[in-house]
Image (cartoon, rainbow, N blue to C red; front, side, top):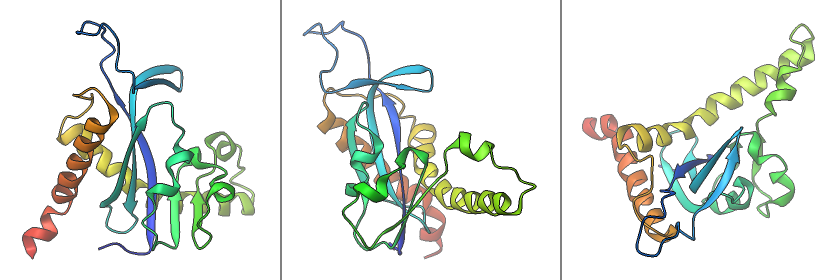
Length: 186
């Protein structure tokens, strides 16, 4: 089912910050990070999604303070030619060792707001960004299934290994849930 393109992204999953446990400490493998103007404590789920079908092919769990660009190369399955990513992956072309891949990274929101849509060249850039966003939207659907359909908004276990195993299983079930109509017809 994997085609020639992928989309990559990451989401934050909260972890309990309580110290009311046997050891009296928070989970040492989870970390905190700031997104926007709010602090989060927990882990990140990095996923690689097929750009055409929207099915997850790679899942990596890291601490929340790991930058998205550090896990990006591991999210590729090796047969894609195009990879789509949001603005958090700026500069990945220089850091990625896979030379056959074309990265399509979104423009930063502040720079996109500065585009003058009456200018013909800026209007073309805006249209290109719209097309990239339409393809990148496929990577958001598995996160919706994980958090809304399955209700997985907070980690259940201590440690990254157990939580990564659980989210890998949930993304596999999410693939079945997203492909249920195609499977039903078959």
